[in-house]
Length: 299
View 1: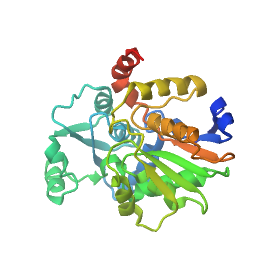
View 2: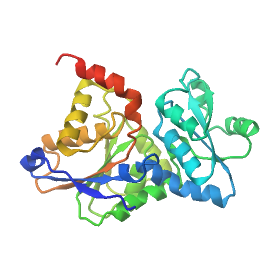
View 3: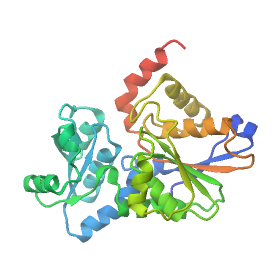
View 4: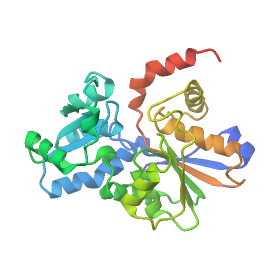
């Protein structure tokens, strides 16, 4: 820390007269990478302050958050419990297998019960079953997560015009907006459907008095964890040109969207853009076969 800021050298950027830098949060830690490190940092400190030895949180079968939480628990001496969406989820998929190897206890619930994850009665049922734990919301998104993500901006000592990041729960963008200098703009690239959803989540986290930002829902490619051959080809091409690996759930969609906006002249010539690489590369393994199948399809 701080994570490095890497300039991207690409002929397309030169053609449109813009500069692109990547905040390489994917390099923070081999397992607790990207925004997951930042979201967990102050939550782990608070759990320690409360003298809690067990962390419980929620996620899907391929959740970056569950993967990182399990690794953080093993590294910093916490027991961990993952409440996993879908009783049909395979505990042998790469994400959940890793989580179990780190000592995480997996608690599978059906999708209807999972929707109750914020209800006090449901939380009390979990406490009766698992004992007294420190609760971290789905995706690690709460006020302490926002505090951790504010440090992204504080670490950047280069002047810029735009800062872009992928969005799921909105906490990373909320932290960026909280610390954003006047005259700069933040753009969130939603990885899921649902216009207006992330804006509401950000308002819940930091209120409605924040800096200039917008969220685009134009690059979700069908929704959360949905991908197309076009996206996979871009991810492959982007890695070949820049030597930066992105995942198909979040960061691949981010960079596809940024490049598309560049081609559409959204950014004025001379603009300097920073993209936050939020990690999540563990998710590639679980989607590798689907990505390879899409690449085999005729153009």
